[in-house]
Image 1 (tube, one colour):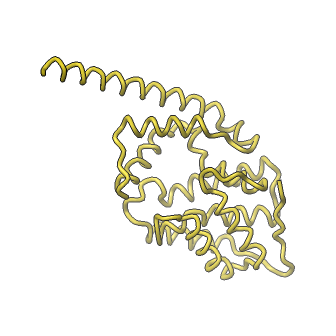
Image 2: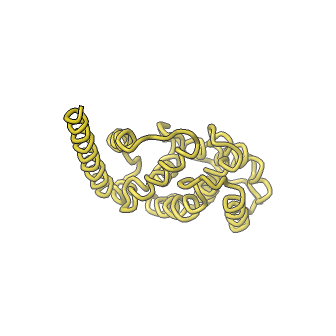
Length: 222
């Protein structure tokens, strides 16, 4: 995987100021129906996990600063659009970051990391692998189903509603097709992800049985 060159002589970045602005914007400007991609998703889920994985994988110095900035800004585009929010987030990062001391190379590196959170993207650097793993850390967590329901509600509010069986089938396919990229993420969430796959499979079997029973009752009544 290719590395990231980030250091620009004489520059000091203000990560605390950036965090404060991102927190303020996400809290005030996100639409109310962002039940999953809310401020907590960024600040309490993705950012802490990205830093944890960075430490475990040995990413430090300027590369760690870029990774933190990308984690903070990866969903900021939702304040403007729900269509291709990664591109919107990258564009907003280019607007915001110079204010906090980020140079041209650093901004470009942050943009690349944000775009690497697109589902299906193949990481081209360790930092891209880390941010992708952090963004989908929920797949291996105990609160997977609770957060998954929040995502279902969010999509329904955006006009992309799914009835329960269809939704569970989609989640089963996603879990089966997903793999964490870094060894640290696999160690952190691998076992939990297997457990969540089992829970989803159990839920789907129950929904299939319920649908079958309803069909039988309807046939008998007819």
